Image 1 (tube, one colour):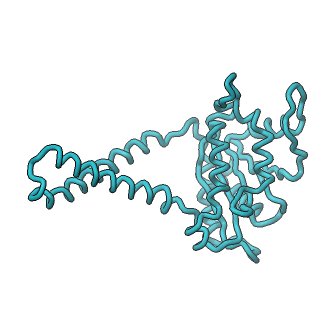
Image 2 (cartoon, one colour):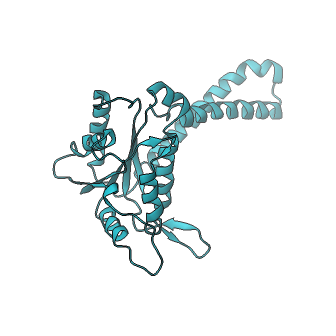
Length: 253
């Protein structure tokens, strides 16, 4: 098994590089690792009917690896230009184009990836305003189009003046190092998601019925009033849970 670290920073030995090293240096024994520093490559767009040796070399490195670890800073709430340029230029190798211009996953389908990003703002500000959100979303969009499966993400906020990685972030890097050391043949979380969805709906239905009980004196046994009240209460609960899961729980801190 092989893990490829992709450093997309202007500093080869900065905080993002240190975060990446914390992950790669703590993988299980027997797992091969390699790091590429994108600034060392002259990455230019692919031209049709012409060979691009740099893109071919990088594409082969991606193909030879089972897991990719992207490390890139966040600038002005966006992904660093170094990694964005890499994605843009690698697009013909990440996806296949159909006759109508739509894309389908390319040759890297079912590989896995981990994302790392950093920003100057504080942990609280990043949590409240989502400064690094767009960086992770851009990586996720590209990888989703390529059919590559997400393992997780690590964010390092409050980096202004920081020299060393905090211990809690090192521990998180070590945790993900162990997680990506195990080779997965496919995304095995589908059954888990269905089970979670079942229990979420079951609990929401129970709560909805509990809320309806005090309303029985008003709505009585009228089928349509019970149906409408159940639907409205269930919808409000669903909206609250989805908001929590997508906005609060997954805020990067």
